[in-house]
Image (cartoon, rainbow, N blue to C red; front, side):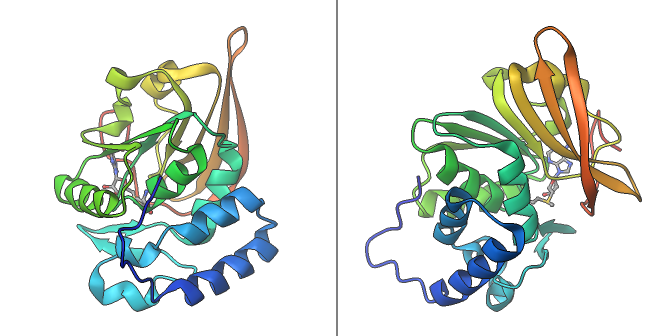
Length: 222
Ligand code: SAM
């Protein structure tokens, strides 16, 4: 879990508190997700010229034509994933690592987040800030996450932060029976989909609603 270094002063705490209090009311957030997001300093996961915008509920550019997801989207995906202490979670699409940090708070020190990013520079920046904040339960991997990450499989939960043409087959295979996956599907019209894997009946897909993400690029992407 994040252990800010000594003398680490957070000048943005009041802004984060205001945003999270608003999201808590609007989305009826659980106390766990509220507290996890209150702890993670989103302003450290955006380029320095966007720091002052970090607590507006909006996506922001993070370089390389990619974005950090809007806080409400991170909150909604965390709620849908039903994240408990000790779970092993795969994220596809690290960006600069913000969503991974929130998930790491929710699964605690006994859990583990494996997050895959295809753009090396973003993965490097994510590693830097996650290390600075003391997250020892997150592994950042560079690669094509549309194929999952077999080395650490199976996973209790999987989430994808870029929109796929359909549920990538390797992600279904790498999800534990009883596990859950949340991912956006579609190109121009995208839907957030909840996938549940059952040992006997295979997978069940449930649409959540319309969303807007960057495309998943790769073997099982666009
Ligand atoms: N998770 C991020 C956050 O904390 O806000 C948001 C990431 S951004 C919306 C989506 C990311 O997915 C981009 O950084 C993009 O490079 C990455 N991406 C797209 N296709 C990918 C693939 N096949 N494997 C890994 N990462 C991919």
